[in-house]
Amino acid sequence: MTVTVRLFAMLKHVAGFEQCQLELPNGADGRAARLHLAQHAPMLSDHLEFCRLAINFEYQPWEVSLRHGDELCLIPPVSGG
Image (cartoon, rainbow, N blue to C red):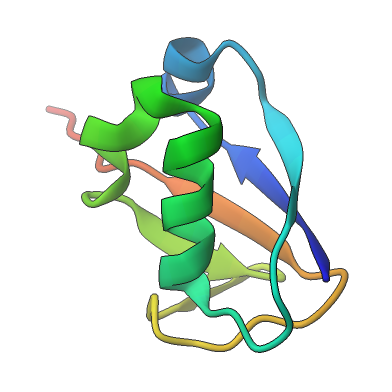
């Protein structure tokens, strides 16, 4: 199955791209997508475990199963003052 991954804030600057397509096996979950993305863009490896996952505009746990055509948004922690 194919999913689209969108990166936000510092993630897109570290990776050098804002979105990509991942080919995953049927039944893959968010953790599998995170692992595949880390292999595709190793510069993100240290950052991905701290990110929140949104699937089709709703926050989800990493254990949620994905479907063909899903859009995954990886949102890094933010701080402000």
